[in-house]
Amino acid sequence: MPQNTPTRKPLLDFDEARERLVSQATTLTPIKTVSLLDAAGHVLRTSVVSPMAVPGFDNSAMDGYAICPTDPHASHHTLTVSQRIAAGYAGTALKPGEAARIFTGAPVPEGTFAVVPQEDTRTEGDHVTIDRVVQAQNYVRLRGEDIALNSEIISVGTRLRPPHIALAASVGLTELVVSTPLKVAILLTGDELVEPGTPLQAGQIYNSNRYWLRDALMQLGCEVIDPGMVRDTPEATREALRQASSQADVVITCGGVSVGEEDHVRAAVESMGHIDLWQIAMKPGKPLAYGKVNQSDFIGLPGNPVSAYVTFVLIAQPFLQARMGLPVPLQMAAGQKMVAGFDWPKPDRRREFLRARPTLQADGTEVLTIWPNQGSGVMSSVAWAHGLIDVPAGQTIKVGDTVRYLSFNRLLSD
Image (cartoon, rainbow, N blue to C red):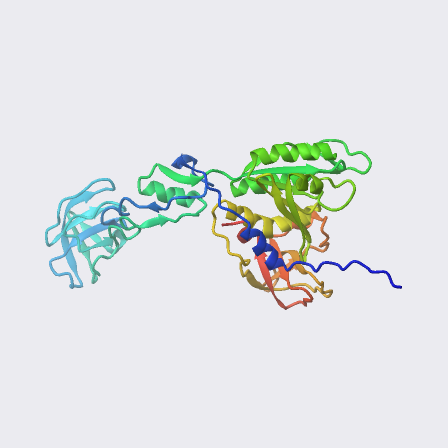
């Protein structure tokens, strides 16, 4: 009688895995009011409505002359210069046949037909001459043309960047209502891991995942809880998870959730909550775990540095962004169509993400090149790359083919 062999569970589709994880995210509810000087990086929770128009008055877009011609349609004007108006000062109303020497940003006086740049004029004494037809409102920035009174200038869910801070300051605001930072604990286990700066013993490797993961979370605006390395024992793992879940909204680990005798994270998580192990049809980065540790979300990334990084950027990061209240599309961004400058002759049954960068050729055209070693442990490929090429399962690539390119700048932005 033939023995029954266990049926291998089919791999989870990449898009389905991403959608499933993002759908588990609940928006962080606590909010706080912060000074404008401290608001950068936070997520806005109350839309910003402008209490004023910007600019607040009609003003000059150029250094030149504000004019009030007697015949606006004439092709030649000679006007008397009646005043000088610098930025920060208001002039008096112009009469027909008068002009005002004016500077960029200064309010245009009542009666102004247009502003003429100084290089288009001739001056003699207290008169200015313009030898052309002038269009009405030329070089006049009208009140409210940038921002209308009571208009929404920053929407809820925006991660505040320097331009947003400048925008809020330009309408006189001093405080904004934002989400409290998402607290994320990172736990790294494995007796083979040692910290950089420590001499390596036989069988040991340096712990690189802790460093890129901590930095990636901080760039997202998360508050990182990092207790350092966790001893690879059941007791130490449970205690680390207990403490992390009492402080953090989300707990993230790298590796340690397989069925090996020395992988204690899975059992520890299950003793305090629940865990689902997903095998995703992606390369690198097939294994991913999601669950709960007490009231905290739990994400278990793969242990290999490249697998962990790619999985974090493509799947875990959108989950964290959704937890922070940022808008996250369930489907990944379309990417950019570019030309391949390489061959990829061996198709894989999984969706592949090749580390790549644009390269300028001698003829001035731009093609994508890939790092020669695409292994899941080759972190040099990530450091070199500017993005990922999204290769559908079963597809080969030849030089000149059009491929889908996902730049890290776009993937890591909001």
